[in-house]
Length: 209
Image (cartoon, helix red, strand yellow):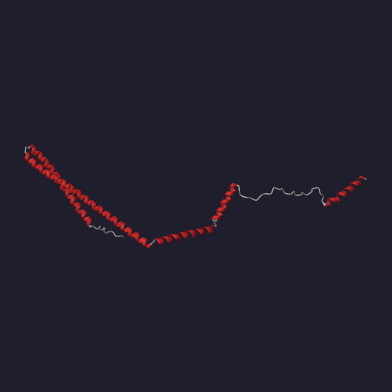
């Protein structure tokens, strides 16, 4: 059974984080002051209009002078807020840059350790051994497959080219006709038949007498 309650991971707060937090708090206070002054200036402006209507010009003029001074304070407050926001942004960006530099440092250290573990000579030796192993395996494959050598391949290609062009030397066929084979005589009597012919002649002579 897994743990039901897990510990929250605590984030380490740096001095830069505290400085940014303080700057943002000061910025927020200035914005609140700016808002309060703006509302007050709007009220004083309306009050000055009312004094002029009532014929109290001197009081209205004094109120407008006070308003002018507060306008200047409002402008300074706006500049201070801009400076605080710019400083916060600079600190935050500097923190990002610091993390990038730390990452680059870790990467460089890792590459350095890898280079120390394997030098250029080791890489060249491994590459040579790999190439020798590939060539050795190729020779074994050629022997097992009974493949032809380059010379045999060239000879086969040359023979194919000669056949294609009709220039291949083939053995000549003799033009002389073959001698006739003597046929056996069909009229030649067999030995038994030669004895019967004189006997038949005698029988014919006796019948004639």
